[in-house]
Amino acid sequence: MIIAIGTVSLISTFFELNAFVQNIITMIGLAVGTDYALFIVARFREERQRGLEKIDAIAKAGSTAGRAVFFSGLTVVFALIGLLIIPQSVFVSLGIGAITVVFVAVLATLTLLPATLSIMGRQGQPIQGSVHQATRARRMEPRASKTCRAISVPGRDLKS
Image (cartoon, rainbow, N blue to C red):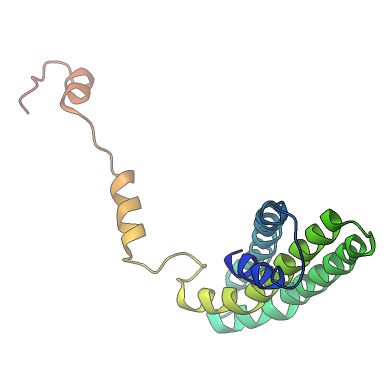
């Protein structure tokens, strides 16, 4: 989204754009970016569960789900071109913002996401031993307070 906002800022030096462009970039960017990324990650995990090595699973996800993401993004961009036909600056502004963020989301999903998956763990999770995993493991440990232990074990005092 930051790249799309920067690109639209550059475009705004040549064309007058409405103030709502940032809102549409945020809304469309979150929706499309999350949807496309989850589509690729789900396919990657599916291929890993089938037994493919990480790099092969990334390649398979890119060739199947990546192609679907590309054509989906292309379809959305073509649909948004309709906003550019209406000769009102609000619609043109929203169209430019939406087209830009969809283009950036597709580009990031097809390039940055596979690179990120290649450095992640087995199923696209953080690598074992990372700070995130250690924090999560500590949170999952059963930690009963002294009061809780005293209540659960009759006859036991609070000093234990």
